[in-house]
Image (cartoon, rainbow, N blue to C red):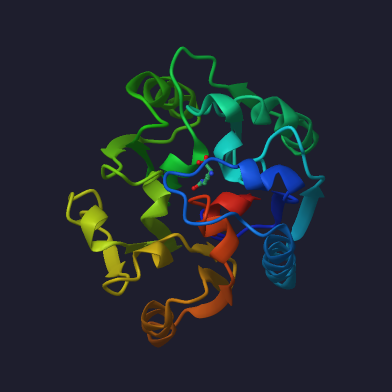
Length: 260
Ligand code: CIR
């Protein structure tokens, strides 16, 4: 039997657009290089496909600089999909751009109507529950509206908190298998993963926490060798993908796809 939280048959990605240079960022650590980002994106998509999954590749959207980070637009669950309501005003329009692709593959598509906000990067789905981190992008009203929808589908939602200064909950964690979470120490210290097996990223390698388990692979950002080694020793098949350009916009492995 497959586990829908890390075994997937499909993914949706969107190619980076030339306007990526105008993407949102908490701190300016340099302008992303489009060619380098495109090359890393090709590697990312090829790795997903290598697992046997179908990848639906959407065209670049010049009007939305952050639209390569598709994860924030939609929550994909086995029972249906929920269109999010991003807290970043410049990203609200990305949801309508994503919806036709979602309608193609899901029979049941719901919407966060507001007034609250919620972004997919703040949502970690595990086999036992849906964890949602309140953040600067995800507020109490957004969490409450989502809780109502997923309860209809039999899911338990638990509200947790994204550490201050961290963009999204999943900036600091990822699901490695049915009971194991990869996390930064600072997020784990909040106590939100009680009852799970937690592996910590190496000190100074906090950005490695935004990895994804996709079928047999863990896609991890390149450049964090101690964490990659720890994961390999723990038995995971790690594929390192360059993330230097997305990192300039606070993006990582999870942001670049919807997985279902
Ligand atoms: C933003 O600030 O919204 C984008 N520059 C980065 C979004 C990253 N998404 C994610 O972690 N799910």
